[in-house]
Length: 375
Image (cartoon, rainbow, N blue to C red; front, side, top):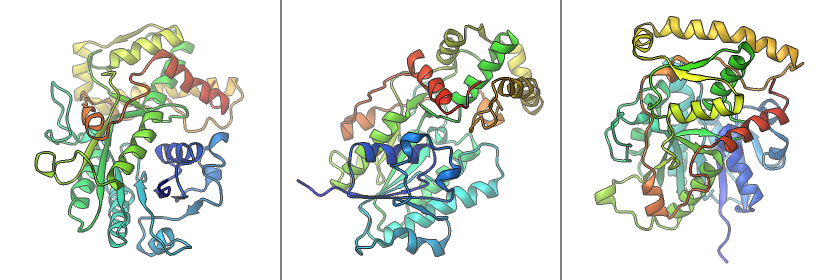
């Protein structure tokens, strides 16, 4: 029986980091786990099931983008090196200043990657985004053209490129679709909060652009399984990988098979909330494209007041990370459309939640209710 790998998770209290820690904990996959984050567990909106997986003995508070913190983060009591390092850290909020992404995402990736290379870590997994691809009529494969269309993606792509230059780094890059699941606080969460407000207002929920705009998804359950499979594959010598035809740095899209579009999500939300959903049509969408700031401000003004009333009526004082606040960057008329077949072919991975469904979205809402976040 091979010894279980030791695991270091940077940004381990973020959405993906905490679920990765939970997956490893529940399945007893690692000999040792260390979770590093700037935020204390008490302040991270952790649900009860994460308590043991992210407990004090495994947790270290540190800012991994700071050079002086690296020895403390990477040194182990037994003097050995970590087997797998997952970089789940970085700024995940949209529409921040460039400096914020430079410092919190790019600098962080470079600092932990250089340290991993110096220590000869067997596998370093860098999380990136599918928003780095140039949108095309067919789903983007890993070697397709790149043209990042969100600020997060601009700096994630810069990190990918700079990490690939680091001598001796055993790098794997994972590009993610929209991740959703229990306790999700982005993308699907925003849509659900908006739908809740439209239900209260008894109004139709209308999307910009068209129902065919692709917004590909992947469930957090499959993300954590994929990350673990990829790290083990990397440590096992990267079987089935061919540098010549596939590139020097193994890169994998993690995206379900559901080809999720705005229409898919609108249908699911309409069923769950019993509201009408529709699309704005060409004229308003064209106007919105030219006046995005004011359109987004109007929508947010319209929704934030009623949302606050819903919370007040329900006696909810701490609604967790949930808000119907719409980010301008996420309202682009741009397809997030990815092909995830390489992961299946090369690593032998299989998705257990192959497409977004009404049941899976209802589970998300149930998780909010459990935390008393949901009005």
